[in-house]
Length: 211
Image (cartoon, rainbow, N blue to C red; front, side, top):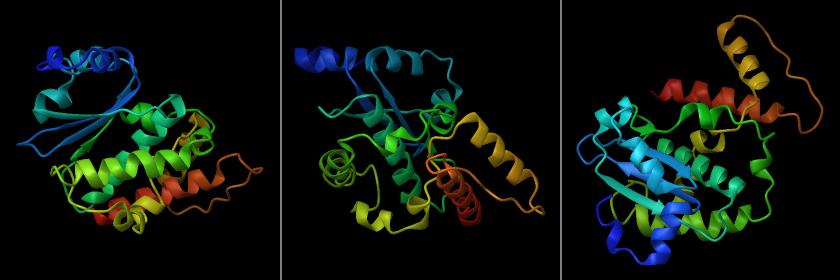
């Protein structure tokens, strides 16, 4: 990885064995790829080993890496999911799929939506995601929307399609989508994921309409 040896030792250690969220960008293709890992140097090699078609086509030539003392498993999942949502909302009318990510990992996680409950979530939002977007991504031309407040007021963020769904929820979603003329009742105890399933469906419909 070009420039790796010029980094300080603590920075090299983080890239080898630290929790990070990373974003690749293709200058010519305009495509974005968002991911998270505990071993960036190894993950970077995997992306560029020639076996990933999306990397071969997108010609990613820039990368920005986000680190934080708050990052653990849940925070990484949360930040990755929020950034994907914000990037998608930043250019919702694009007919090209500019924002890419590991779809199976994001959509099919089975954490029982615990990403919404971790203790530092508010601090992560205000001290990590917001300054990263407004002081790094926007000034350096990675995004076109200046503040997150502008995006948060939009439907694609309020009803984000990037939510953790169980395999059972995915089955329900596919059944509903495959039967547009049927009526369905979503029933379940508190905390079983009714709202997540519904907002995922609404977001998917909204995104299809905008595209």
